[in-house]
Length: 302
Image 1 (cartoon, rainbow, N blue to C red):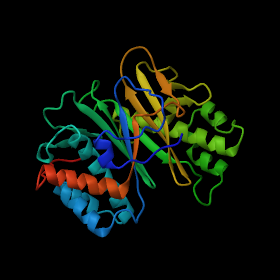
Image 2 (image 1 turned 60 degrees about the vertical axis):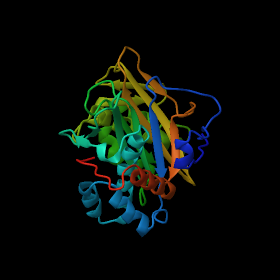
Image 3 (image 1 turned 180 degrees about the vertical axis):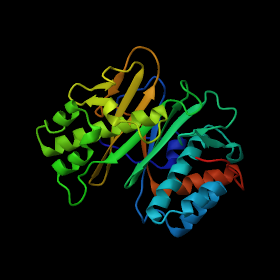
Image 4 (image 1 turned 135 degrees about the vertical axis):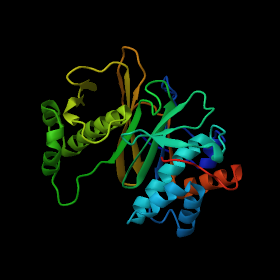
């Protein structure tokens, strides 16, 4: 799927060009905003202004990162959560966040109708947020997202890489991950399995320690099973983001209720996926935060 970059200004003015010409809309109006990052995209000045645009606690946590890239990715994640609230007319001073006991962040801002559930993920040069109206399992709601760069780690072969993760795959998955027509296809299969498992557990709001073997993704039939049975009421939305020569696979997991469970193909039309460049996104979001409130005060933890 060919993705088109848009500026934050154009997006907020409803001038976004969709990635495809046909329309497909999820019943929950879920959206994914993805930001591509490179070390040159955020200058020292922009980084410092970004820290001043968020709450002191979040800024202090970001400053503790040893690597600047980790700090910048985390800053982008904080700004993504605030950008979605700005889009709903929320003043920066009214933006409040908290986290569950297992660490899943959620919005505590009053006056949101309907409430919003969201989840943030990042890997290498990509940071993404998935969000949708909250309907099930408040306060964090049942939405999770995961993205990963499709690659074999340096100094590893595909077989040795899969072997390090094999204890988190089911017997069917271990067979299917080597059953494609090429190593490239097998690699893509593995990352679809892994990102779906991650997105599902994040949607549940579970911390570390969940046995990934409980979740099985049959990539050939596009069937998800949990503890051997198809879970009812779940939507799994697969998507791809290309950043130059790099390819990222992502999955959004949502519990919507009902009897049906759906896996949406990465080949489907994704008007809900929007991609931004880090420098312009951070600059635009800082400007919008400071315009709405000269000295933003955003409390609690994200």
